[in-house]
Image (cartoon, rainbow, N blue to C red):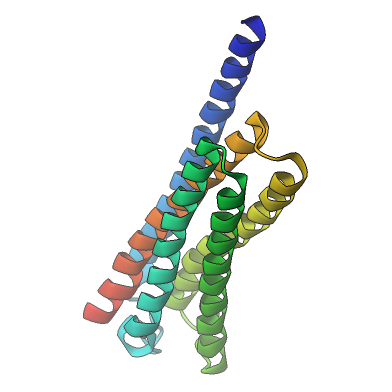
Length: 194
């Protein structure tokens, strides 16, 4: 009983610590969004969002990330049920969708840079690359985390620690999806409309 209480207390502390971490990321992204909103019209005579954004392309990115959030949720459900094979399967699919999203984001960045629309061209582009690139770095971190989780699932199975880590990963991944919805709306949709 005492060991169970200690484990529960440890899990609660870990969860609280992770929520604190996520809130620091909220502050980071809020700052980046605020900066973007202030300088979004600072194009230095160069292109604005309407000139360079391809909404169909970004919609594909968005769908990949949203579906990956769903598969991440299925991974957590499988883990809670104790179905290690399903948890691994959904983790692999989540990784694949996330990697595809990141690949498309890098392709978009590469295209913009090759068209002489790099972060050095204007305040708008600098803020765009910083905001979207920071999200991309978080996606990369999530992908690396998922590889570690995969190795732990294969080696250790669904222990209490691994299941907790899967749950925290799911929270992180859903958080990135929420941030992307804001990016899609504020950066891309508003950029094309205005």
